[in-house]
Image 1 (cartoon, rainbow, N blue to C red):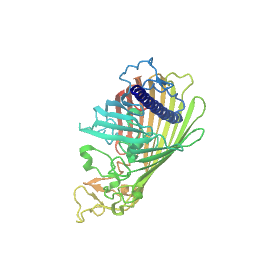
Image 2: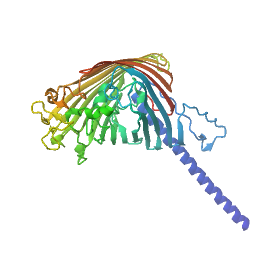
Image 3: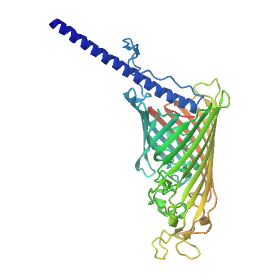
Image 4: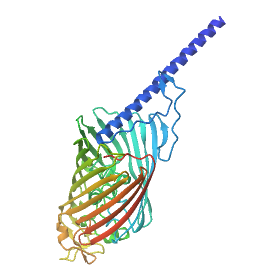
Length: 506
């Protein structure tokens, strides 16, 4: 009887172990299938964005392969890690890759107002000598089978040597929504045009295009919010985006932001944008206080060697120049972009190639009525804008300002690792009423608004990529600024990448 009981106990234990083994195998295979679905989803989206570039095969799984539910004992050993490989934390359907990008510049310019005057980008060269443009730490990976996530933290130094830290992006993104939908939520760069969504290491030139720096901000338009995209089931790439974000803060230039230029210690001596102080205290009361950004983009093969991409974007939201009309002033920005790329069938590592890009923007900006006698004492105080006729604080009527701009650039990858580039930037604006009145600030006549004055720039450059993880770039800028004059600048940029980094999209 004892033997029979022992045999029954042994049988039950074997069955229990078998059930546990079967369940473990099912979970393992399910995890592999989910991971494969993630990879295929990402490959489909990459194919749609850049059909000319073959997608590399997925890396082998970190765990031992399974054949018919039984682990193989003769699995190949894992590849040794190198500095160019992702620094990975976790495995399976939940992991994080870590990377670091360092970008520096050295050079000189004839301009006295390099930071915020000559150069409009927050990570552009900001002084003669050396500039730490950015040290960017990136974190991205899979949260689970349904979401990925990414975060980019940037460290830098301004022209005074003060350190600063920025959260460029931090968001989660869906992988498993039906009907080709995708949701992104968090703090992210707004889908507007070609340049705004790029990080510094993806720039084709040392600095930000002028139209982006003026209309979308020194650090690019980005804010907390959510964005829904739909990949249309067409024979060519076709995707529609709709984003809703906060409209306030320094990363929402042209909306509820202080806006304007940044001249360091001289900022107080300069008039604000539209010669009106900003008012950011309205808060969020309804949906009309949010920033809305629709975008549509499509791309298709012209033939086996050429690809064309077209995009249209818009932005709608309140701005901070309300004055007496607070709550009623709004901004509209419209944009269009065009990219063409040629790459022969016989290319080696993507070279040679020719890529031409054009992007234009148009802004309508409501500037509300504004009285410079803000304390109501009827006396012209220091720092207040004066009416030249009365000598008293100026009273400005409401008006709508219109600004335009574009850049066009040509890149020629003439041999592996070598790219020659040429970019032309142009900014225009309609002359506003407040710019024609001869207003005075501390006795000086104010003419065209420096934040709206016409200007143009021509920038040839040469870039060498010794490897995928290093970059050396030499660039010359010729700037022509109305009422300021001509300036010449030469910048040499150096960059390294450690660990994981985002792919460069077409």
